[in-house]
Length: 230
Image (cartoon, rainbow, N blue to C red; front, top):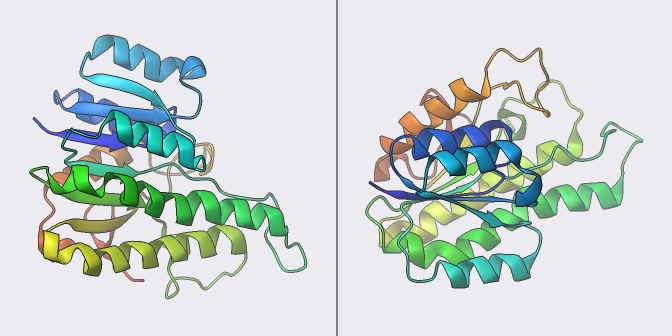
């Protein structure tokens, strides 16, 4: 089977993506900031020997480089940038938290590109050659009719532009670059009232990932495979 490198696997969609691929006997490189406290991920690794856990704070360039060195010789079919944050509590007009906004951009927009820079050679040596990042419909310019949430929205809009640019830059190497809207999901960020479970989102994302072609590169897709507008 293939191999996947996932960030943000301690809970939510990241954990369920790790589970989906581990259950299909993929080699899963699951990362999170604090493996020692990621109890569900540790339990999953105990059940699936091809799943290994690696410490990674995506804002720590040194940790990214150490992981890249550790995985240097290995092909990675799918690099999935899942780690992300919502940002400051208040994101309306007259509520600008500059430092919180910058942190949100660092995690949601800049870190995914740094991950690509360090692991693109691994992806290039693989069979599927897929780079995916967790975008959001809230980062869509055309779908923003309600305003607010400035830090989160701009961080995801910026990520969408990164993935669109990568699609062009990496096309000569036949590498697919896509952003995903996971749906409104019952996570810490989405809340318990959300209509989609992490399991539903993750299984849908896996199905879409495994059906991607070069014609999909540069798109924003949802977990059901529908193309969303930028």
